Image (tube, rainbow, N blue to C red; front, top):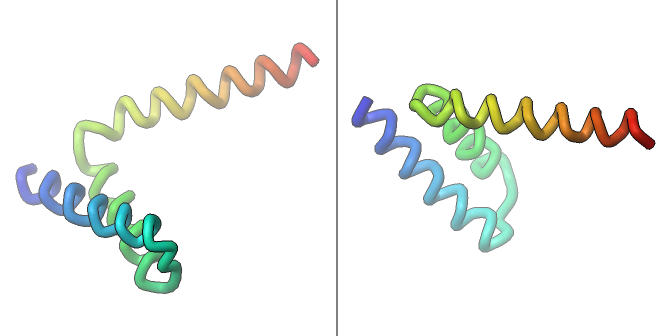
Length: 66
């Protein structure tokens, strides 16, 4: 668990700097994929899934009212 959290922090930090410097390429894509992969292994995956579901439900409800 400690290794996963460390890798999430490392890949998140590298991804932040790559996006901030607008350096996009295959390396950035790899970092983004690894960040997502390791983030899914942490306890943050549950709240992220719940937030995504809530946002999608809200957008669907707004779309059906229009």
